[in-house]
Image (cartoon, rainbow, N blue to C red):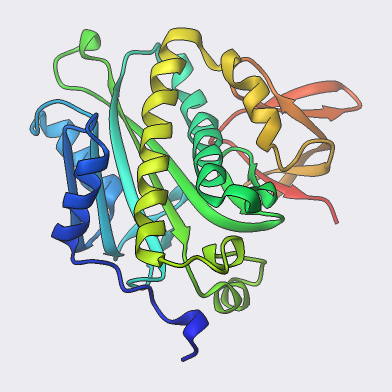
Length: 284
């Protein structure tokens, strides 16, 4: 195995958790495990049980054995090849506004990764609703899930935002998946300290989500439209909108509306596309 694809030697889970705790004082609980089924599922179960005290929480793992993407698609990472973590936040929003959390999480994640990347950041962008890309290749997947807090309507919801960032192995992943995949070595090929970079990525993303969720509660998604435009990978590009594999719309992506829905310009006008109903594929 070449040095380029060698798994990153992350610190022991408890060491990494302590390091993150010193940098994330706003988080009430931070944990990192050697392995688990799904960090999102673990935090959702904890929220539903009513245990664990105040939020926000952060949970990461070296190895995720039952990870999930959108539409419940399963996948498993290799230890040291993917940075896997989830954050849980209390939110007080009407149910109709909860879908906006998905593109919100993608915008904040892309901005956070750009901040870590520095001068190399220009190629980082976001494919609606929340895939972070390096140019046209997927670098990180984001999964947003919500559950109502115990205690009735006044207790609000818990939103869990999980992300997996490919650290290495882009060529092998691209071959296995039959599509272009990126990893962090392409963004920062000359990074002097890969362990420090991992902590930087986690902390930047966690705080970006923390701040974005609070801003969404105060100002709504409209406050993020300009920020979305700055990271939008689909703007002005021809896209197909698919539902269960069937094309239902073809047109040009033209940003998002006040609810975070993708707008696709078709002969009938700008059509809003809701999170969770469809997937987007660029036209050939």
